[in-house]
Image 1 (cartoon, rainbow, N blue to C red):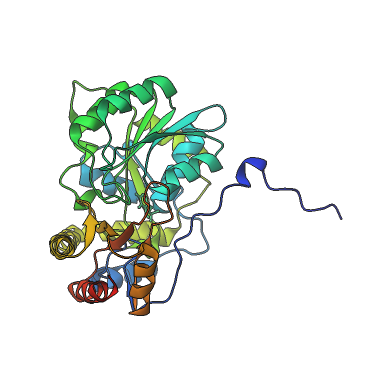
Image 2 (spheres, helix red, strand yellow):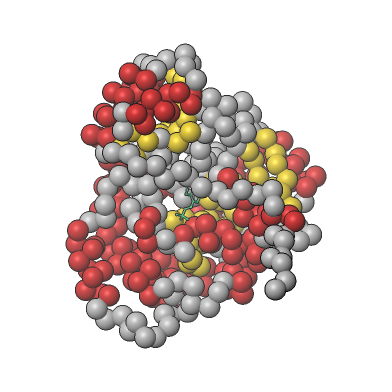
Length: 357
Ligand code: PMP
C-alpha cells in the first residue's frame, strides 16, 4: 500500500479553529442565544417535517427560503444565497472570489475564521491592524486597500471578539476604495444600531461588490440548525452557486429557516432582552477591576487588571461558568470574552467573577 499522502503543505501550519467544548452549568463562551426558539416554532417545524420527502434530494436552490428572506429584506431572490451557517457562506465567497493568486485583507483582531477560511481556500491573507481601541482608521484602511488590492476585504460589524460595530463612514470609504468584494460579516448585526444594508440603497454609491452576511445562529436562536445567508448583487450569488456543493442545504435546514421567518416578533423580543442584559452586564463590569470595551453585540470583551486572565477563566470554570479565553490570541493579551446570557446566568457569572478577580 502506498503511504498516506502528506497534507497540503500550506495547510500544515493551520490548526483547526475550535472553541473548547467543556462541560459547564453556565455556558457563555460561543455567543449563542441563551433562549431556545419559541415552542410554537418547534411544533411548526415538526409538522412541516412530516411532509418532507426524505427519499428525495432537497430543493437545490432553496427557492422558498430565499424568496422568504428576500421578501423580509425587500430585495430580489437572486440577491440571496443560503448555506450551512454563515461560515459556509464565507467559504463559498472565498472559493468563488478568492483562491490562489488572490488576496484577502483582514483587520485584526477580528473573527478568526475570515483568515482561516481564506488560507484553506488558497487565498493569500494580508493583515492590517486596528488601533489600540480596536477601531479601524479610515485613512489607513484606504491606504491598505490601495497597497494590497485584495479580491476580498473583510469587515465584521459588530466585530467579534471586540464588540463594536463599524461606523457607517468607515464602511462607505471601504466600499468606495475596495477593488473587489467587501464582505460585511453581520453575524451579530441585529444586536447593533446600524447595518451596511442601508448602503445598498444609496444610488450615489456603487455597491455591486458589497456583501452582507448574516446568520440564524445568534439572534434567531438556531445555532443547531446551521443556517446563514448573504445579501448581495446577483453576480455574487451566481458565483457562490458555482462553488456550492449540489444539495448542500438539507430539507430540514431549509424548513427550519422558512419556519423561523414567521417568528420575526419573537426574535426581536429576544434581541431586546439580550441588549438590555448587555447594558446591565457592562454597568456591573465597569464597577469591577477589569478593563472593558463597548459592545453592540451579544458579548463583551474584558481584561482583568489584578489577576492573570487564564487564572480568572479557570476560577470561573471552577464555579461552573464557562467563558471564552482570548488571552492567548494575538493582540488580545489578557482578554476574556463573555456571552450575554439569561438574567439568571448573568447574575451567576457576575457573582463568580467577583469572587474570581
Ligand atoms: N461570523 C462571526 C463574526 C461569528 O462570530 C460567527 C460565529 N462564531 C460566525 C460568523 C459563524 O456563524 P454561523 O456559521 O453559526 O452562522
